[in-house]
Length: 184
Length: 120
Figure 1 (tube, helix red, strand yellow):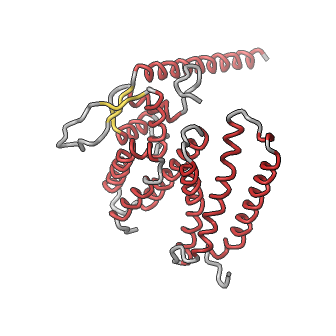
Figure 2: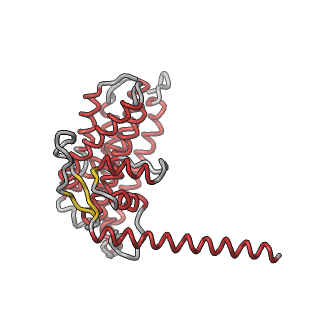
Figure 3: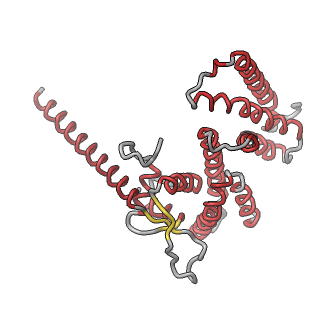
């Protein structure tokens, strides 16, 4: 399969930019270099394109991005600002949303066309994480989350509501993503 | 879990990276290739796994950046090489000892089973 080599490189650079800043600054350039090395090696081995291999490299790196952000959230003390919380939540939920956008592109040839739908699919998990992270941090710090039961009740209720909304939206829209005709 | 804790086993990725660096300093791509050779093609590490592990190993002092720059005309000068540290060597030795012990244990059990089978 023929595809634009420069576009692939740019796309990978964009993916690397999703890593936490400290990680990116220390290892981002090396990762890009390794990506190019691997692609060059593959090109020499096979005359045909190596689309599947490139997809694997992207998926593996995307998992790495999630892992690094999850580690930051788990460490807690390194999450110095609320902005960083939002940024990590935004990136993790974006990666959750991307497979559905990819399916939609594959079957319907539309690039994030139902913008409201994809926006919702992105924002819901983000809100979920923003509510969940402080609870996880409290538990990890050895404190009781029952210290403020009203707060806990609201949080749990919101988490359940978000999970329900996200799940039902996904079940409802999945046929559209995979190109079932006449779906709405 | 702290990967420098001498009693805690290393993850497969960390173990393979340390093993790859035990013979010479290597850059990321070089480590990947060596891991593939060492594992007879059974372990294929992507950039996400490799650099995620390297980051934690750098933080833990198991490996460090090296000054080594192989012939700049043949290689990219910006390429970073990594080398194993004394702490890394110690962790690798401890892990190999653990494996050795497990292999001995497995052999003994196999022998014991065989003896049992003959006795019955």
